[in-house]
Amino acid sequence: MSVLKTKPVRAQDQTSFILCICLLAFSSVQCSRDNDRAYSRGSTVIVAYADEAFGLDSNAARFLLFLPLLTLDEHGKLVGRLARSWEHSPDYREWTYHLRTDVRWHDGVPVTAHDVKFTLELLSHPEVLEIAPGAIESITVIDDYTITVRGTRWHKPDDDELLYWEVYYPKHLLQHLDPKEANAWEFWTHPVGNGPYRFVRYLPETMMEFEANPDYYRGKPRIERVVLKFTGRAGPGLTELLSGNVDAVDVKWRQIPRLAADPRFRVYYVNWLGECSAIFWQHDHPLLGDPRVRRALTLAINRSELLQMLNLPEDLPLFDGVYTSRQFRRSQLPEQLPYDPAQAKHLLETAGWLDTDGDGVLDRDGQALGFTALVNISYGEYESIALYVQDQLRRVGVRMEIQAVDSSVISKRMERGEFEAAFTGLRFSLFLQRLFTRWQLGYQNAEVVALIDRLLVTANPDAADHIYRRLSEIFRMDLPVTFLFPAVGTQVVHRRIRGMSSPWRGDVLNFMEDLWLEDES
Image 1 (tube, helix red, strand yellow):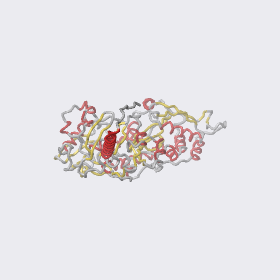
Image 2 (tube, one colour):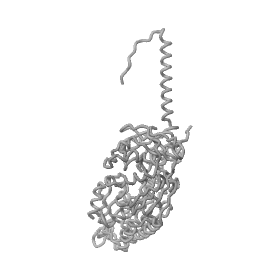
Image 3 (cartoon, one colour):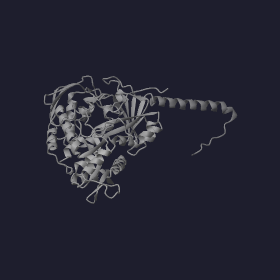
Image 4 (cartoon, helix red, strand yellow):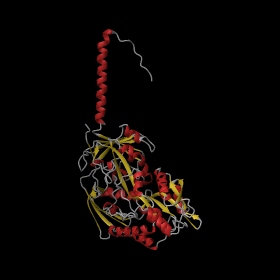
């Protein structure tokens, strides 16, 4: 540290010197107070954000800046935002949206149906393809505030309405830009939106700042300012939270106990609908091809205890099967097979597996009951999950070896059928599409094939619910995979931020307009 050297102060100058020092100190304190007011806990929320990428497919600020047609309320019910009302045709393939007439872009230009049409066409553009090719058959602007969209796969069959994740962009600012460069447009770092917050400034590798929109149609948000503080993918987000520099941060499961015990914070989670962690089984394997063995392996795993081991919420719903978003919102999930190690042992014995040599591992005809499981190390928690399952299976006489590999390796080996078991993530939509087309699981079921074919062409959510229920019944019997637990995102938030709840409002950025701050004094 450098030391500032000064000349001695003469006696007659002491009064002036002391007065000067007092003024400087007052000025410094006043400046600090002014800065505190600008970014005080009573006016600004600072969120640690790992990925600085902004674009069509990556934008943490999307719901601060832009409006979707619909969103979810605190109970998981779809409610209007840009759309004030909507209806569908009898076959559910055509949807008409009546837009609000009191929404403006932050530069003052009215938001119209032409902006919605422009955005849907941009997302469907061959150079973008955020919407699958052929999903939209037609987009018709009836008038400035009414639009009709007809399609085959534009509406997921597992949703009541139009996807509530999509937001819409200003045609008048973007229509002449090249879609090939869409994710590199300067617009994303200096955006003009139509939502509850307006862009203020962007400092590369540092932050992006927003202010409450006084002209927002629902009224000016109660939280005055929002700052995304970029911490990097492996950055010090948690350290920043504990130091009081940020108010919210996404965390890993293993970090939850320490934070949950800290009275400054609250922990929230969000279900990533239609996603879960699972064990894929190779049905052509001489041991795992027996459905009794797969059922026994599933019954031997205490999945409720696994949630506790991973520090996930104890009330997180567990299931054996697949479900639609609507079924989740209605708590109509497929029933979970119970934890029953005694029944697991009985099934294995029925299948001829006994411990004839007393080594603790079941065997049959001189062959031990064991297999090797690939474990996805791209997400650190899977090794802990696999070790837990390994111990659970050991207790019923099954030996499971663990082979840690990258997610890309798992994908390639599953596509070639070169695996016995695999611990990895599962997304229902991809699972159903790839079960017989991309992955070589050795699983065969003609009824499942027919059901999936029907699902891919239906737009009726009632029909989709029925198909999903039947698929779940079959999966509970065949167990092509063992569903472990649903995928969730966890976020730790300072207690002064109010209005959040799990699982529908567990992400501070997605619902900032509905939140408020409470003084801790």
